[in-house]
Image (cartoon, rainbow, N blue to C red; front, top):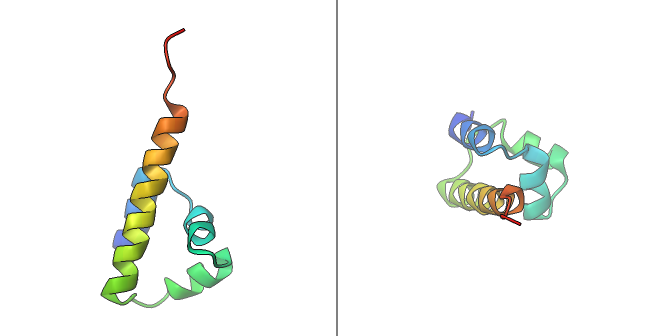
Length: 66
């Protein structure tokens, strides 16, 4: 279930616990939610969080010339 979310997170280098933290829920709660297909609104919210975390990760890992 929710394979698209799991693949998007893995492809972005984002861990499920990071998504849960951004949602303000325990990581165990997110894992339980992902056992069943999420409603489209919640799925869109998770996808947006993944995108935001990916952007932050990219900005943090970008090295600037000295």
